[in-house]
Image 1: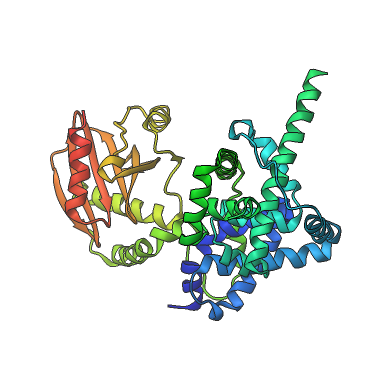
Image 2 (image 1 turned 180 degrees about the vertical axis):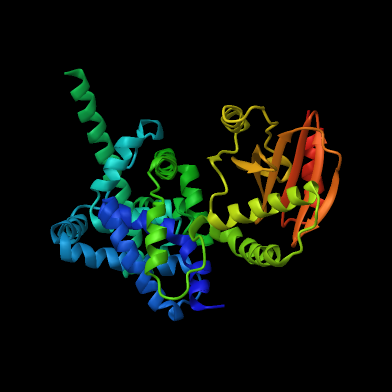
Length: 177
Length: 244
């Protein structure tokens, strides 16, 4: 079987996962398409290096492609990440209000709130909740220790719960006007 | 375990990432502490809510096409979702196409009809134009077909029996428009060609590596074409004809 055939068989089926991650990280259909195409070509070039499961391997390549793309095109959005993390470290251990009732979760609000998360938190959340990857896999993809994955996920969920609440409240006020 | 540590480990517990010893410890704490228990429930709801309600952005089909053109090497066909069942089908289909090209055409309308249906099945799997209306809901598929045909074909999902209705398409076979229901069983695809009439011949055939099963019920001819084995194909034929 040619390399191309093997690639089409093992890697291409994960194109939805690749696009989903890129779309969430770049927050734009068009950019996500460009990034995924680049990432796929890169994956093809490094196909020899694939050991084990194709999906996390591909997602690591896509994630790095997104990250470099953001560095080149929208560095300001990445800068929000480390700052937010530093702020997280500085604040008291969160006795967090991730307390949010699922029935309050409006689909549109939720998507908005996830898109508003800083890059490192958004990345961890999408990989965990939408791609169902393990902490170990996420750590490898984001290139951070497992402990950091844990704290980012915790922080992501707290931020999310807070912002959904704020957005919901704001929209309620708007409709009451 | 201190309350702060329990709170910290809650996320890992929800994510099923906690080792057995710590899980037991945390579970004991959860049983003893209603506030912690409440947080745990909320957290689990949040996680489930995200999974259920957050957008999952599937790749647009244009992307697969772009990629196919950009990748070096000879293009084989139809990437993405097709992939799981695609390769075995494609391999069989290629053989079938070659065979069709060189096969002696036997006379007779029935034979021609069989070959037309096998060719249609092969074309549709190769060209990724398998399904015009994708739904496992018979109440979606049936009206869609009825609106486009001069007859109303029987439509049913047999997921319980292991034949999942994937959708339907229209086709033109034997000089008439026909309904084609598409079923999935494991990695196999089954086309069920349906049109009104009382055919003379029921029975099982094999053409170019594909199995064909002809039957009729209540004034409808039903013809199944698939690379699925003959026994299972007969099972579906029985389900389709016995249904009403």
